[in-house]
Image (cartoon, rainbow, N blue to C red; front, side, top):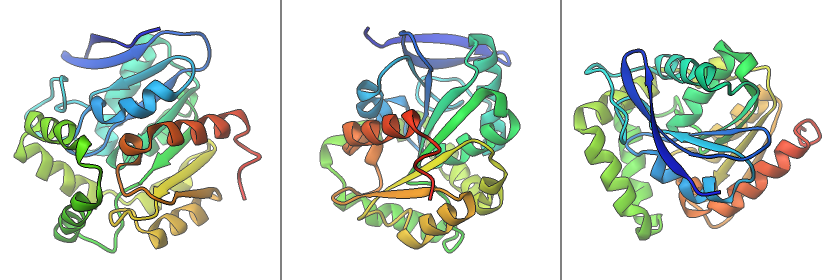
Length: 247
């Protein structure tokens, strides 16, 4: 089945969702900072079954309030949409900042979430806003240049005020305090060359969550874009046996 774009009204605002209808347990994919659902499509296309990739409020084609939302507020919007669409027990796959939103959604509404796959999770507390921005700049030259049109379009759609503000909320959000509250099975993924989610940080998160970290040897930060089929394969294997893959 092909992917289709649709709009749903959540809290009086239009939320854009790219979806593929199919039978089975749904996947919900959450994009990172300064991008949109398009960043997720290489992974989305390679996943089996129903897949939904929303644009977070204020990003991509989704309307948003003028103020910047926190990960918890983004999660609340998504929960309202998922309730309306009957997406209970969904498998969440987040990329970068989307991991923080996924964690908040799993904490607030465990009935909506059966497992989490966190790819390149942010935000490492060893870096504040400035150092995170520098890490983003370090990542750019080692990424596949073919993704740049998608990343650039996402940043332009969000605008600099929302991008910078969302970066600040990401840094203030203490992932290391929130992840241990998740009751669903978790899998962590990262690219070996990723300067934004370094190995020490993901190892720390894995220890807190009691889960595995799988490293993709040739990838950098944007693994959901540059290594989509590989990410989808690992996520699908995890979904088939989520408890068997815990350490």
